Length: 476
Ligand code: SAH
Ligand code: SF4
Ligand code: F3S
Image 1 (cartoon, helix red, strand yellow):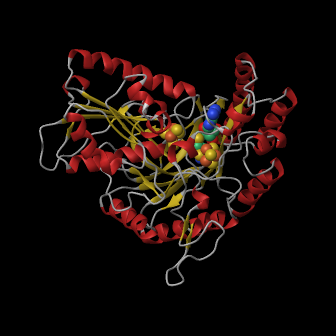
Image 2: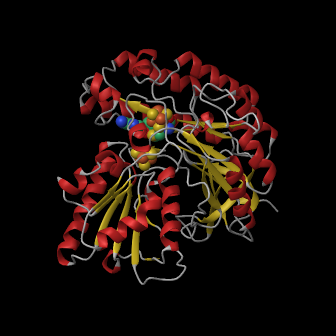
Image 3: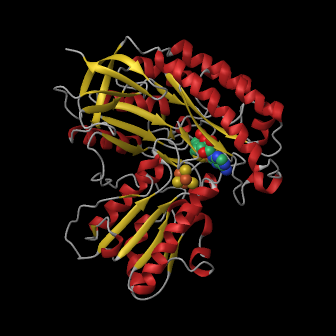
């Protein structure tokens, strides 16, 4: 469970993580690249690392020895931006003592704030939006001549399809594969359509090739990433018409099937699903392939129809419950997690109670829960008043958390007494004597190391659990 943290799939301890880059030739220039926000941003940093390693940059985790500092940033909630702003202020002070230092902002905050970061706030030398990373070498060179540089152009085509991401920061076991970019949904609370631009899907062949390459390099798990993976479409228009009769069309379920067949040794995960677009075929393909993990993240946001309508989510409570019913019927082994926002504009106590009752009805395995944070220029900011007092938002959040804690515990404890296949990810955070890994359902499992090895699949007998973690012992 994660409260008001960066975003799902990236745990709080990885926020601000520095990316290490392998150099090709070595210009002698040192780069510090820090990532914040969601998995898409961490994945993009691997693209940036790849582009700059081609230019001969080496990396450092120490700001003091960096020639260039780049922050790949997140705008999803005000707090996320505040944290980055503080980091930028620290670098601004560093720059006063060392004027040759280049500081740049990448990602969603760069796209949202554009020139103001340079002109009004005078925090940085370089502002580069998520679709302009190919231009980074030129822009850095430009800044090197004493000027400021901005490229925040959004693209309808850019998917960085053929750029092979640099994975040196990873554990060599799990990797992200970006399958689409942008979002066309316009949920009224959300800044992403403004920071990431229009939705576009990546060529399926390049996705399968990336997965194969990862498998060949010893990786054991890939997560297919997009803001709304269920609307992945290749060679199809938004309305579902074929674009080029001579080429195959590919839906998200078909894409998963292609990756699952091409890489039988890889576990395949995906994030994020959207309730309005999640089809039965996705659940069917999960069941058909053992290597597609039994886990669906399906954000609900609110359990009340009026709020869902104001959020512009495109589904009702009933539709959502029907999707849950379909998952449980077709793929009963699937665990299900969600996202919830408390205190959205005008939310009454009764409407909030409907979120709680929906949670009681679904019994999610896990949830990411947030207080509503108004974002400039979004539909909600323009149309509705952010009128729920902070204390009420917080009270409702704690109520939502309380229900979720109980449901997480109820759901996880059913695994006690079973034997689970676990992908060993590395030593547990708490003890060097234990390994930690995850099950297909995405539950964390901790067990004494024995003769197990990192990066392998092992069978673990589950003996006990807490709300978030299973504890067990190796079988055999
Ligand atoms: N594309 C994903 C969500 C990406 S943002 C989806 O549609 O499900 C991740 C989560 O952050 C959202 O699901 C939402 O719960 C939360 N979030 C987004 N904007 C927010 C805001 N303005 N205030 C609070 N939480 C927000
Ligand atoms: Fe934001 Fe909605 Fe798109 Fe998710 S689907 S990124 S919440 S606009
Ligand atoms: Fe944040 Fe941008 Fe991701 S706003 S959540 S980094 S898409």
